[in-house]
Image 1: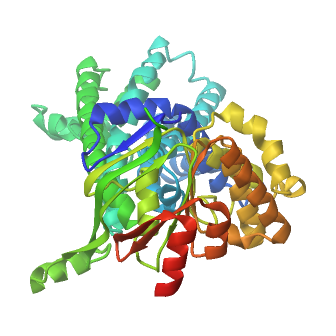
Image 2: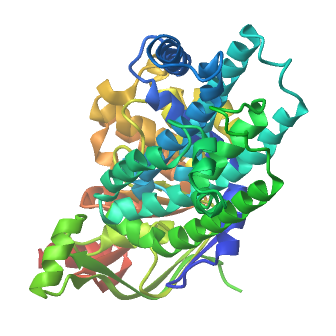
Image 3: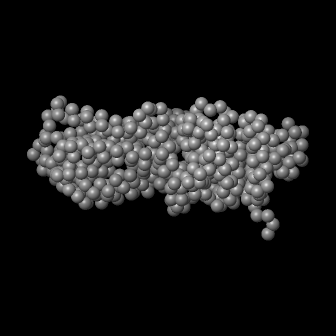
Length: 288
Length: 244
């Protein structure tokens, strides 16, 4: 992990060199991930157990709401909400955490050298752990309700194709916002507001089939799905749950095209994030 | 070939952009409307050249704002120079302030592992050396306590011990060693002497002139971002003492 020779010039390191360096620091990425998890639960008695409590509370709350407060379109409707809810929570937690990751670690950044990309990456991995726990609990709950695995099949494995795209997209956004947030500390408030508004542009509070029904020729849906947040959530839903038709609208099928489109947009976002971060990281460190 | 060079600094300048809107979009907008120059340049290091052969201990002295700390951060690779080139050969270990990047809410052991890893140790190596590090720091019994409540002396002991056991080939130290108590300072001096015998390179920024005189063979004197004098410790320190 050490550099045998440091050559420090005004020249910006190439993206390729940065990536190679990141790879050589992979062990430190894991250590920073551990640190980020330890710091999150630093003053709590339950510690890491809190990462179970929060999703369990959400499961309970949504079950109660859909069972007793709102009219359910289908039996066990709440169960169908969880994968989307938790995927959204993942995005919604990871981005603000990544956004402040550089600023928050100013002391160690100013006192030692390591590739700065490491901080948003480690923060994202810590969020991924929580996402994994939430999804595990959801699966257990679906088993309890006899929805899983009887009505679900091997397409659950498609999640393995969705998660990397999701990570790439989030990291791209996280890299851009974290380096900008050092230069303008307003950015984290902008991020919070945008994510709050984004909740209405993703199929969490309403099923995607409603969007499909809004315009018959489907262009509205295509436009809607250009938003990676929305397309990722749709992909999770279609991979994890049996097709359900809501209020007479035919359920949208799993779409490989949508997966491909989401991958392309996510990789472009990641590339943009890496490029942008690489351009601004030294300027940001001077401002820390 | 004579003694290989551990550090080469070739015509290096570092200019910082002093930004008046300092981290706020609102201020940035106001400055834009007022048409004031949003950015001014401040030269911290001006056309500096020197080199350090392997195994030498060099002190950098100068008044506040003379560019000493900036120079050290350039050597560590934390800042990028505005002009010139820096080459450092060998594993760099940094000890740039009291906390050395340690987090107050992590335990002494966790902090030691993380900082050791940022200095180039693998996790395995860091865990293996942890008992030695904590013993040298005289903190074995508080290894699992968060360092938030440690005294400044305890923190600096930990920081120094981690750096000392990271196998530094080039050790960059900024003004921290004066904090520990007498007996620990003696231990530090012993460790530094050991490093010198082992042929490790040390660059040491300090205001503590007696400490510089005691451990450095050569001293570089920076004055308002420029090189004022570079030579044997005794000569430079005498000239510095006269000018102040």
